[in-house]
Amino acid sequence: MPSWIYIPTAGGWLPSDLSDLVAWYDADDASTLYDATSGGNLVTSHDAQVKRWEDKSGNGRHATQNDANGPKIQTTSGTLDSKPVMKFVEASSSFLT
Image (tube, rainbow, N blue to C red; front, side, top):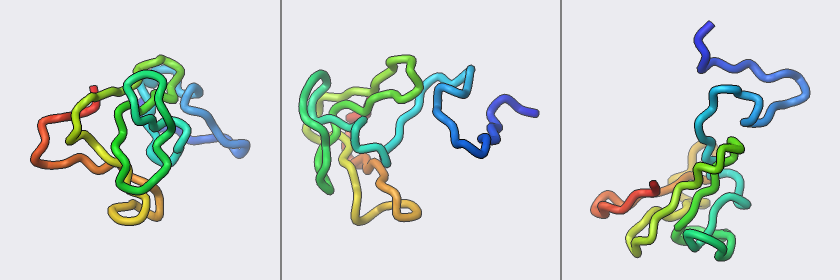
């Protein structure tokens, strides 16, 4: 079985259950989205800019950016299966790194 396939147990799972996971970014978890590259406040409103997206894998590979045209959280439009998504501005050269 390929290493990227994971079948969770009945009790649920955590990203840390995947031994070879490099990073886990979850737009559905508002506690991982911040308005600053360090410290800052949680991003909770639609169309608010995200400057740090924290890695849930336990590896500490947080994605950051400090550009005014950076990605924004979409909670009412542009969602996938009623889950929040990150919207990146196509004209911007700013990405989370």
